[in-house]
Amino acid sequence: MNARDWLIQLYPRAWRERYGEEFDALLEECLHSPLDALDIFLGALDAHLEFPFEMNWRLMNMVNKLRTSILIVFAAYIGFIVGGMSFYGLVDDSPMADLMKARADMPLFAAWTAVEVGAVIALLSVVIGGLPLAWTVIRRALTSSREDLRWLLVPVFAFLALVLYVMFMASIGLGRLQIPGVVPVVSHDNFPLGNRLLIGGFMLVFILGAIVSTVAVWKIISNTNMPESTFKILGREKSVKLYEYAFIPAVVATLAMLLMLIATIIWGWLAYSAMPQVFAEHWGLLLTSTTSSFITTVAIMLASTAVAFFGVARGYLARKMA
Amino acid sequence: MNLADFGRFSDPALLILSSLADGPKHGYGMMTDIETMTGVRLGPGTLYGALARLEGSGLIKAMAAQDRRRPYQLTAKGAAALREQLTILQKLASTGLKRLAAL
Image 1 (cartoon, rainbow over the protein chains, first blue to last red):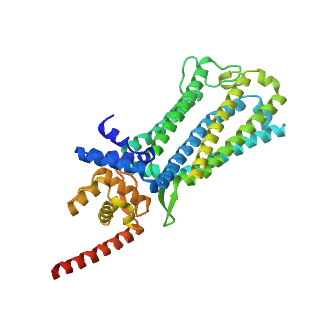
Image 2 (image 1 turned 90 degrees about the vertical axis):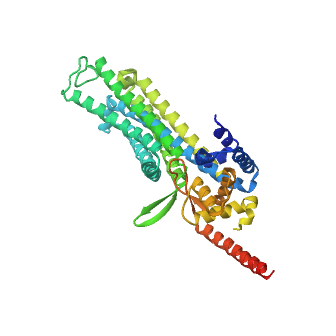
Image 3 (image 1 turned 135 degrees about the vertical axis):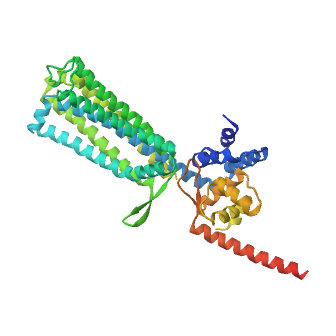
């Protein structure tokens, strides 16, 4: 810790969260003498003692907590998508897919539809809530912050890596590329180790991409100390309180996750009642046990939903305390 | 909003408002502008003590940060407060000078 860091640490945490970065940039240029250090010491003392500004800092604290809460819900949503994809993979490859396509079992079909409806609501909520925030972050990164621009490239590269991997898989599937031990078309009875590794590789690229992208978005938004942003809509300027605006869609996304979780559990129970033998077999991801694959999926969804609810509760308390 | 409510930060606050009347500036920009304008060098702790009060009172507004430096701009409320304060100072200066001339 250098002298600058030490001096900044003298200020209250809420003050540092709001002014710390810019104050550090100022000190880089103007911290010349012990008199400056004394002035900072007195400024820090004033910041600790000045009660009339407590409300203002409480408001800033609310904004910071709300921002973290929204990021928690966003990260939980990404986790839920991983669970959702695993669920889709489980159903898509198994004999249960035919049962649902034929709509032979209406309750099972209704539960599946509820999961799909929840997925659409959650996606729309994340898009609606995240759009002004994403636009602000991109605008800021392109105009002023090179560091943010670097972080912004992470999801782009993660997506490109996924696209390249899908193209690689498609080349094998179409027979344009031949790899020993990998067959172009697989079935339940013919699923060689090479193909399992290939699909495992896809899952790895997807999950790693999701993790690094989430970390990058978290980092960028944490850097964006902008509670408000102005947008030009149809020629008129509109100011949006970004985090307060995004909180409502975050709540809706969390409720949609709960809906999907409940619908998935009901679906599992109905599917088990209709086709118990399928759960005794290996229709899970990479031909693992159906039961353990389904339980893992539900566990991921449950953990993600719990994290999202934690984020929402944190945001709600922050708004209430402000 | 009366700048006198800022206590020992009322003078630095007036200097900051006067500096921002010329356009948005970040901390170091204000510091050098004030020094050029008045010969007074505000310490970093004093500058940000006044800045936090001005922002908290809605007299100035933070803009998007540029490479860790955050510019601030005067709000309409801040411009009104500055005008009011400078008018008082102008009257004071004019009265004081008249009285001095009569000596």
